[in-house]
Length: 490
Ligand code: ADP
Image 1 (tube, rainbow, N blue to C red):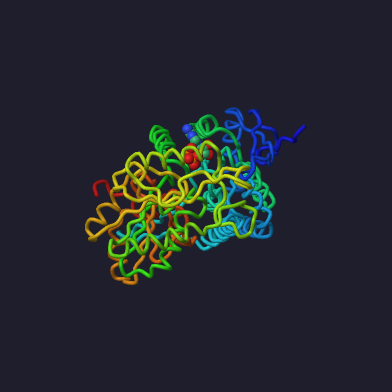
Image 2 (image 1 turned 90 degrees about the vertical axis):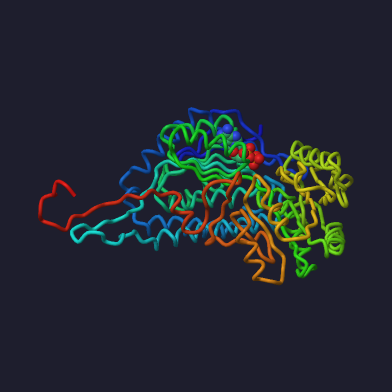
């Protein structure tokens, strides 16, 4: 009989009370592991224990440097096991090894940055407004945090929530995506090994609509930190509104990339292809709408199509693979349905546009990198997030229309600009309604730069010092310097 992996409930490894679930390798459907899932009763137990654990004076009064010590150790353990963690994440979601290795290293960097941010964090002494009163503004933890994550970059997005929440002195219950629970269980082992006191972390795999919902609805959960689809994010915002608690929501995107006439077209074509096709397009920040100046449209498109034809779609464990399989059959169908819809709406598929078959492709869910032209920005596939390797290309003539169209989106997550003129780049960057702009690069990240979106791409920022502040609440303390009684009327 296949072993069922335990879940991690408030410092104990045990079988959850839900039905066991399977993790399968998207490259060939083989079984990675069977893991235990939680029930609402498990959620209640984890939250109640988390509430006790964060209020325990040993944690409540812990010095920042003590919490930092745990996170430095987490970073160290992640780095020491980077290869194994990367291999495990590739098995879970099918991303090529080079990509998952990058995500693992970025997770280690996030843990180390949050340790340093925590250790060096200064409380505030606001400017004095009266000679006999001194005010302090202190930051305190919020309490029990619900962290809910998607399947596309689990280790990075999970540490992005856990590290700042722990640095700030909270307790966290992590509900990973159904498809990628294995790495989350490894993260629990890492925090345990790093010496995090019992009860402060639980990892509860299970269905979003059941376990995720039970978790965010629990009265003792005081903040929701979510990365995933916009419709789920909206639902969670409703729950948070009812409970009057805060959220950090990192949701979908349909990010524009813009190629100006004066761009280095060779460099830009590589950047644009990487921006949309890496991770097989399964990234909220994928540069999925491309605007090209009409004077270089034909030349650029030709370069891009040639480059796209040369991309190596293949087994994610083969070292030189650029693009691996999609996460599942149902997701592949959804991507293909969008491509068919694009054709119905008058689009032309200039490269790709179908599932790949033959050889290794027959064992997995591989979709050809696809470029579609001939559509206006108002077409469905230019507005809705496909979350697959599908790029729509639109020519533009003048900057005003370009900006109008680039901003004509429900989403506001990211954008790319390709030009040799940095003055223009900065002017355009300031006018784009998004949370991140890349100029002559794409998908590059720094842990010290806050990340997040506006419009329907979300609320709040992760990473940077703001990423830790998001898990704290301020308290103002007034200290009288006077030995006189309070006056009555001023
Ligand atoms: P994706 O498109 O990335 O799968 P989802 O929003 O469906 O986006 O899922 C992201 C995470 O949200 C997953 O962990 C999923 O289980 C969880 N989730 C889905 N529905 C709910 C819900 N109603 N309440 C809480 N969590 C949910």
